[in-house]
Length: 200
Ligand code: GAR
Image 1 (cartoon, rainbow, N blue to C red):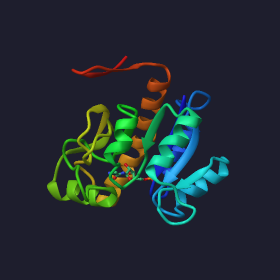
Image 2: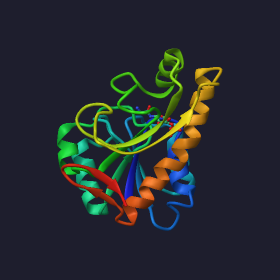
Image 3: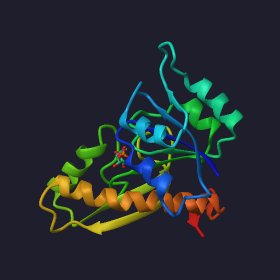
Image 4: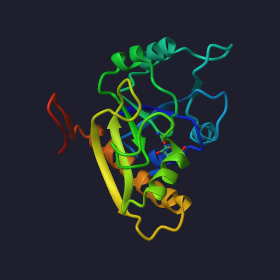
C-alpha cells in the first residue's frame, strides 16, 4: 500500500511506520509532507530517501491542489497525519474521502479539538485526574479530531506523576497502534460503511 505521511514535529510516528513489523514490506511511504520548510521528521524521511514536500505558497513550496495532483500521479492510497498540526482544507478531504487518517494522543472524543495537540493534551489529561488515557486513530474530516474512530488503545495512568510521564507512555502505544491500523488497511481489513468502521 502506497501512503503519504504528513508531519509537523520530530517524526517518531513516521519512524515507527517505517520500522514496525506491522508495516515492513506491505506499507510504502512514498512522500512526507509538512507545513514547515524543515522539521525533524524530514531528517527521518531523509534517512530512508523519501521525498519531502512543504505546503507553502512561498517559492519551492506546494499548494494543496499541487499535492492532490502529485498524490494522484504517485497513486497514493492512504494519507496519514502523524503529528501534523494544521487543519486540512475541505477540497483536499473531498479528494481523498475516507482516505486520510490521524493519530491523536488521547482517548477521543475527550481531549480533542483546536489547540489540543502534543503536551497540551497530556497536561489536560493529567490535570483532570482521569484514570485512563491512550491513543486514537480516526478518519480525518473538516474539523479537528471529530472524524469517525477506527481504533483506540487505552492505558491506566492513575499512578502517573507528570504530564511528561503520560506523554512517554502514550507514545509507546501510538508507535504500535498506528502501524497496526496501517497493516489492517494494507490487508483490506478495515471495513468502512455508512453506519460503522470495523477492523476485521
Ligand atoms: C504525537 O504524539 C501525535 O499523536 C501528536 O503529536 C505527536 C507527534 O509526535 N499529534 C497530535 O497531537 C495531533 N492532534 P511525532 O512527530 O514524534 O510522531
